[in-house]
Length: 228
Image (cartoon, rainbow, N blue to C red; front, side):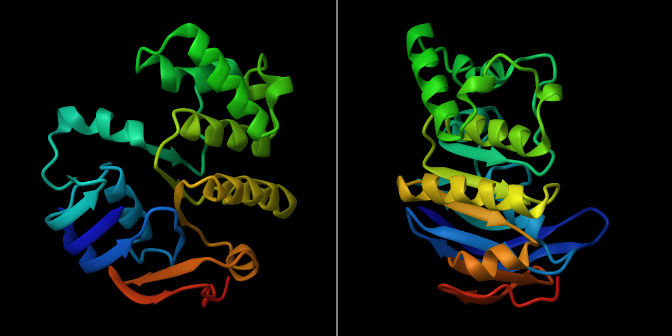
């Protein structure tokens, strides 16, 4: 599903954020990416959906080499990759329904299909009853659930989440994690960068720890391993 081979990423300021990364992630896995601030987690995650391009090495997702992918082809790649951000990135002038539908409208799906998919997805994240509300009328947890719905409405094979509970209170964070677990149970590969020690230690999945741009630990059902 996802494979990195000898991946390096050096920024113009000289910072090396990926230093010879080799990793393989199978279809259907749930993987936490952990490590101290500045370790290279965000770069690792961003290279997965081509927000960042590696300086060298190979990144394969579903048989596509992201390192050689033309910029014009990136939108097509992202139709098979759902991305969830810490700060939601919702469109403030669109309703909940419209924010989620937008991901399908750009693929020119039929209106009837879009409506069915959007309402089923909003039902999954328990927001069907708030479909006509604007993001500003929602709590932070609800906004994150809209963001998740938008990322999965076109049934991607991979969902990548960058600190999805970073701005949320503990109770809401558990609700969000339950949704990610449900998504994973349905067969979607989930890759999540997180600083949430309690979640990693309680909801056990594979843990990849990054320090200094290198993978220093890769454990099935691993622990967080850092002071939070």
